[in-house]
Length: 212
Image 1 (tube, rainbow, N blue to C red):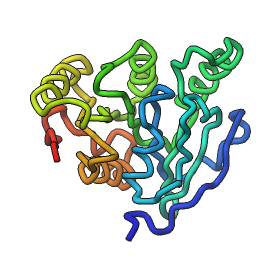
Image 2 (cartoon, rainbow, N blue to C red; image 1 turned 135 degrees about the horizontal axis):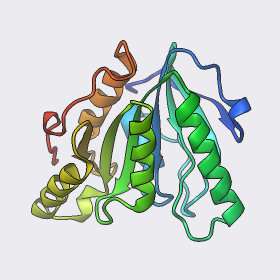
Image 3 (spheres, rainbow, N blue to C red; image 1 turned 30 degrees about the vertical axis):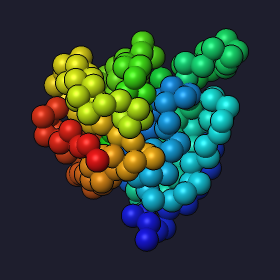
Image 4 (cartoon, helix red, strand yellow; image 1 turned 180 degrees about the horizontal axis):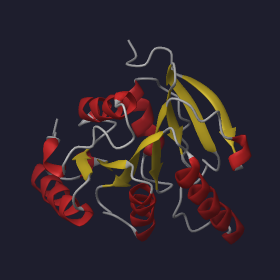
């Protein structure tokens, strides 16, 4: 059974005026176009195909809103960092993200999805800066952890935790092996049910370095 049996797609927005009503709470997912973001969303929600996956990176060009429960949403932000995306699209993305993070009162936290083998990119750091600037929590999913040995994965996790500093948590994650899926789901629920945007933010050491 799905962890979110009533999850459903609401709409995709190309402009801020198209965002859904700014009520309740929502958690945004962001990541490079080939980071495994859609697979992570599907694994965490236990809803195969909720977020569309593609063999061609960069297919998510809209801000996609999904309702998980009454007044609780997951937001799939446009992928970034793919070389073939035209410059006007990249510029539009920056402006859209700036408006989204500055204006969404219902935004509770950011889940940053990045390939564990790549580490944090400049664009990833920019997304974390967006979250910090508006006082929101952030949680890093180091995806594709099954591609590394246990020792390599834990070493990367420790390095990323040092890089992001206080106020941002991080974990290892694999959609294919289900590594860290339960942990990520608990974090998502924590942010969606916290009373205030800053509530429920763990220190980096509060999450367990799960390894299936």
